[in-house]
Amino acid sequence: MRRLLLIPGAIAARLQRDLLLLILLLLCVGFSLLEPAAVATYPLRVDWSTIAALTGLLLLTTALEESGFLQHLAYHVITRMHSERHLALLLVGTAAAMASVLTNDIALFIVVPLTLGLHGMAALPTARLVIFEALAVNAGSVLTPMGNPQNLFLWHRSGATFAAFVGEMAPLAAILLGTLLLLTLLAFSARPIETHEDITPPPLSRALLWTSLLLYPVFLLLLELRRPWLGLAVVGAIFAAAFRHIWRQVDWALIVVFILMFIDLRLFTELPRVQALVASVGLHDPQRLYLAGVLTSQVISNVPGAILLAEHSGDWRIIAWAVNVGGFGLLIGSLANLIALRLLGQRQAWWSFHAWSLPFLGAIATLAHCWLFWP
Image (cartoon, rainbow, N blue to C red; front, side):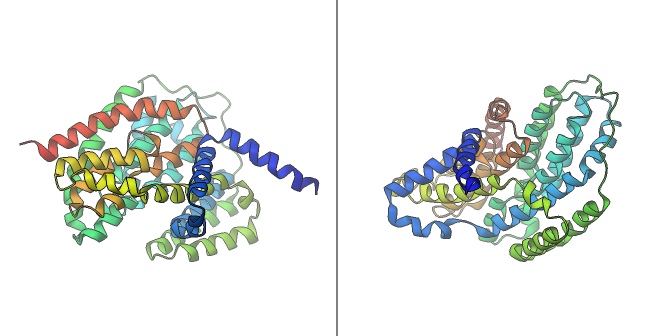
């Protein structure tokens, strides 16, 4: 009974620490008060396949962290890097390359914990590195259909071949990555990395490590086969049987954040005034469509933005360019931004993120517009 009485207090304390979770919860309550009958439809608005995939990835990433492997890998990386700039370029390049093949979310679940493992080994601008990794996965994921959810949606809707889609997105990927690499050179100094004298990697749990490494390709294969729930069942059952403590270490609040985002954003896009506003913009004009995609992503994120605009226009190329550019700027522009900062776990990094991301959005939105519409 005493434990049950402590639960409301623990929830209140968590909400006080987690501003994003609190905002999303209040929005959900507000929508529920405005239209109580819609509450019964909330489960239908959640993309449960994405939730299953995210839960499986959280289990696997948590297991890798608990095994000590990422800290060991971080130790070998930090002892071979000559400067902060070299390290930043390595992490940004790795994150971007992985995102084009494994999707942006999966890339973050590998690169960000690795970066956090560097924190205790050297004096590094860890928050800035994670922010640039978020920018990197958004940039790298632009190139291919499987790089991010909005690309996958638009690719299926367009009927284009894989090669044709990559060909249309390659110029944008070049603009984003070229600008990001230049910004990385400017943002990180060439001073040598100062490692702590007593750094040693933590003990390595080989059983947990090998279990995680063997489950990763199995889980990714099941995701590719569109069987995320089966993948989660396999991963979850093995960890529950052999490493039960991993379940307790997972950031379950992140799962709640994503569920609330699905509900809140879809309720928002279904508002009659929002639908009427989008319809009145004049999306038959490619330049207006591009601007609408960039700005809409800043309000409702780029995946819902792509879905909303695709209902009013068949120009998938402009929509794809616009919503991928719109993934930068405000934190909500891309779910990858939210994942990166959640993994970082520093609320003050929200302000730092926008200090880098908003100017970056201004630069690449202008460059992409010039490429698309320059006479």
